[in-house]
Image 1 (cartoon, rainbow, N blue to C red):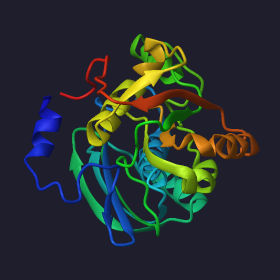
Image 2: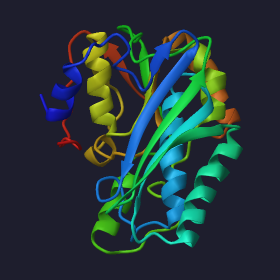
Image 3: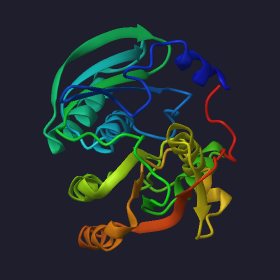
Length: 272
């Protein structure tokens, strides 16, 4: 067990274990976005940093079939941050929130050596979709095309430039597709730590393994920060889900079936 999993295991698990905590009709989610862990300032503008920190948190709400409504922002600002840079950060937060009709209702600000952001989103749903719900025989699929984020990460780590349209800079969320298709899904989560790691989470909570019927390479299995959707569904809904994906122009790969057994991630851990 890695230290992240061990630390989480020390707490009461009543509301822990999904992308957010379900409390009646609310889904509350929180994520950190920290300099030199999740990003370097040489890779992104202050606007892009704020934008991504908000988008990756909204992703958690979407995959639980919840509509984000309110957000609290905790931020540690470097002591040398300029007023222009602070305006960039505010613009990044505000532009994303406006596009998803989210209200910023507060938070906290402190000074420090690095730029660290904590986002807490309060969302609402009448039918949350959890990681648990996948059953043997259900099909497993992911949206989008995986692997590109890992390639771009390797480029920036070598000091090379990447396109401003890279999903490493700005994740592409599949909210319209997800909300329409959600009624036929049995489980879901976003791909933040790589497809293989997310499959191991589904395997553990649902006590199933996976029979792959498509060749998924290691670059796809181990590419983190994709923020595409990994989900399952009963095979009788396949035609309906494919139709919705086509309608929203969302690439969809149905690649495996849940079977008896277990699945262990083949990728290096992203966390300590």
